[in-house]
Image (cartoon, rainbow, N blue to C red; front, side, top):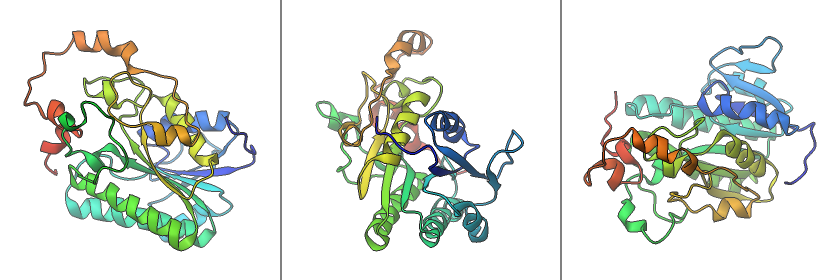
Length: 269
């Protein structure tokens, strides 16, 4: 693993959310100084943590001061009506990139999603992994917002000379709990390894898939491995117990048909 200075500070937006809560301690253990940014207040006193909204430019300017890199996790993580997605996931992501630019922060790791390509059919990839080069086929407004974030990151990399990595995260939980997650699971340990690799690797702009080394994975891990990611976990250790509690899967189940699973049939609240 590439060495880095333990004095480097990384800002994690959405640090109180699901992924943020799973990776922040692991990154700190690797020597990173963590600053949090979230709507929620910190659970422990004395943490370096800014309470604010990602659409608030002044709060983001405060958070970006003295930061070396940003992991942008904040946002709505599920489908929602477009005005809400527009305000938080699209406008909010723009504000994060703009605040990084103003502060001279040169590296942003953006939490995209596998739902950026969710309307691709699984049958089209029986004999090959899903590459980052397949055309975007978002399965929700949520997925659309992630395509926007990837495009925005490409623009900031070219226009403002940033290093931007977009991580199409699968399902980052302590362990998989659905059949689909046997393919899409990103373990907490592998999430730490992936984010750490993207904080230190030499690149201009990259899109990578964020999944563990799952036996049943559909996604191409070669781009992430090229940047130093070495996944150690495999969802297969959970497969027997998980599948024993599930009914047989019907062939027309969206979870069986589409890469995005049931997101392809979800409707905004």
